[in-house]
Structure formats: C-alpha cells, structure tokens
Length: 86
Image 1 (cartoon, rainbow, N blue to C red):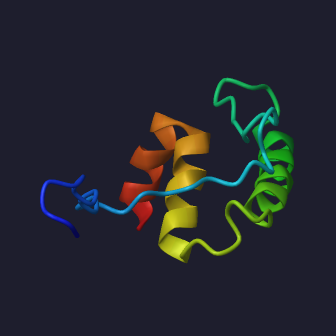
Image 2: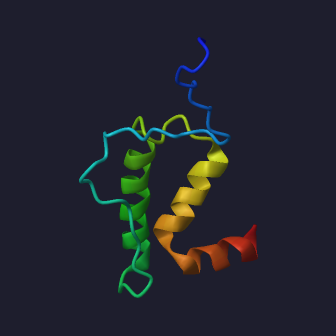
C-alpha cells in the first residue's frame, strides 16, 4: 500500500453470521404449557419443529445447537425439565 493512502480494514475478531432469508415472516415453533391437551400440542410442536429444523437455516447446525433451539422454542419450563432428566 502506498504511504499516506487509506488503510485496509481490520478483520473482525469474532465471526460474522449471515442468516438465511428462508424463514422471514414465518412464526417459529412455540409451546403452551398451560394448554388443555399437552400430548396433542406436543405432537404438533414436534412436527412443526422438524419442518423448521429441515430448512437451510437450521439443517447444517450441530445437534447441540438444534437442542438449544428446541429448548428456546419450548420456553423456560423446558430448560428445567431438560436439566432434571438429562
């Protein structure tokens, strides 16, 4: 580079993540722990989550990352249940 010219930008210390646009406007899975038919609701949640996790935004994520997403979608109570049994 020539003296006095603009300096090259410095690379970021942390990686930058680009999210896919394939799920913009689509509601993420959720679960209502106060629902009246939890088994049926969980079956629906499971199927919808499987569809979500098969999209390009999630398909290449590790199993650990997928579990974290599922726990987030299920809500705070799921973390307590997960930690109790795992």
